[in-house]
Image 1 (cartoon, rainbow, N blue to C red):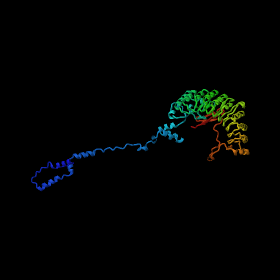
Image 2: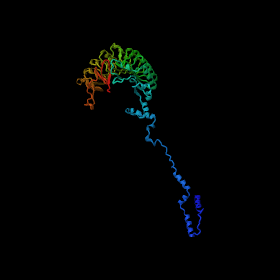
Image 3: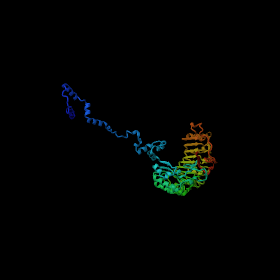
Image 4: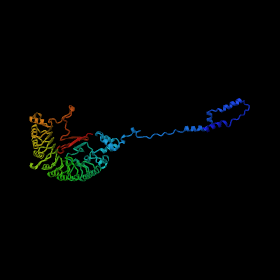
Length: 526
């Protein structure tokens, strides 16, 4: 500050202007001196431009940059995917709690949700075998425990005719014959199926249920070696040689063998295969034999070796005569089922050699032919200790045949459905002989009339713990559906001989109920 003031003083005192006029009056000289000393600040800045230039230069400089605070996740929280903050374990737990109707939509959210939802899938039905061979099934669904390969093992045709038999669905052309075995012509080669089973077993070691058709014993052996926890197995087109591979599944508990299906495929399961099965799978709890052949020896071997067997089912069996006596070796059998059987046992032998199942609780007969009196008498003799009987939609069950059920004296519950040949008198004579009866169910037995009920039967009804009596009602509509036309008899879609309309024209098709039992044919319009 002192230097600045000194500079101002020096500027005012040094180098004064020369005074050329010596005749100037003193007053005028004094006034000129005073005016010169009062220079303004603007004149001073114009005379001294260096400080001004510094100020102007400073003003032209750009303003200093202001450092912005670092952006955090909280600042942009509404713009990000909040699920990214959750771990995979927590997301899996959340997605597992969603209802089934929302789980399929989760695959479309993002790639992460696609992978997470795939890890939650436990059961799958394969429709394309390429999905197995390419390994995509393991990548998409690494935690599978139940796999159905039946429809994936079949070669599809581009047709509008769909033929189905339980779990088997097949599209066929319009020129097929009901006497062909359609599945045998459309099943993939055995080598391809075995290769797919090996790849599936190596990728899904925790597999617990498998459904397959057309495999060999080598494919099943690879499954048995890799999948030690396999408990449920269903084999279509099974034969004695394939059962060698099943024997390696030591932890198997539920087994369903399908040997032959009329019109689809044919295969042989005899006493040899049943014996191999009995010696290998000793921990079986449930066994179903569909379309299998055998005799007393094969049934006896299973009863002696599989001591833990509780449920045995025969579906459309082709057993030889005398096999029924082998059921007496099943000491722990709890449930015995017969489904769609044309006969029980054509020649069961003397009753003194039949024996009986001591632990049997339930006898189930559905869609069976019960016209053979000798066969039905032998069945009730083997099941004399049964406590529950269920008979549904069986043919030939009249009063005389049903009267044979009196041999079962420990019956506590009886269910009759679709037994149109039974009368009130025939039912009354049997159920009154059962002193331990506690439950009765009668549905759609049109010959049972309410006005024919005797006082003794009414007294029994009053003492029962459970009673359902609707003999003349085949189907009961809900009150909200009355008057809508539901429940009325529609016209028949197929006859034994008729025509099926194909999009390319009329194609004659003969449907023979004897040649194609159990068929379910559907047409899809295009």
